Image (cartoon, rainbow, N blue to C red; front, side, top):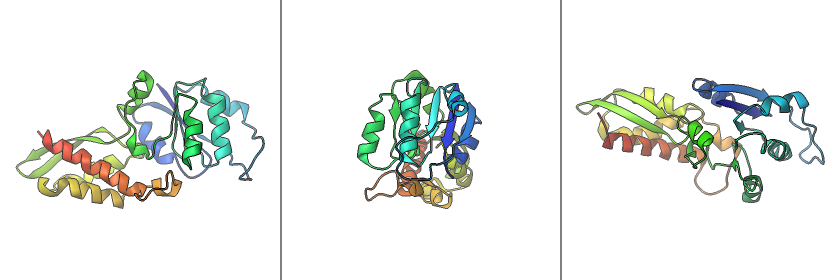
Length: 215
């Protein structure tokens, strides 16, 4: 399966470094338009030809017009598009109206949707799932079954080896605060819960669930 990550700025390189370990993955950098408002954006033919070869596109493009033009041009050429950077419910609804476009509140929150290609990707990347091996009350091993696209689950898993099971979920949630999470800077939504707190809760819940099924 082919994954293409496209960006016009500083976001996406961690996802590329993580995802390429599991799937054939490209990292495509586009030039950001200079103006915030553009009547027409030129999409480079060679870049579009490269992106059309993907099964799934993850876009971390920040410019809304460029994001919309990419989705409009590519949604019928690829199996699925995941928009990692968007602002406003209206824009989200506009993008998702294409049918095979997902705008998650947080990239840590991807779960299966019934599409075989999308679900194959989400079997490896999305809402964290881990398995823990314990000896007594100590964690001796953490296996990452599904990692956040940015790689933070792998970071937390390594940090949790040696921790007490009694405080494991809380420490996992707190430890994510030490990973340089960039979700808040993408301003994906505007409610009271910041995206880093959301990521922390997902990891806390993953370790809570793992303890229920611990080895």
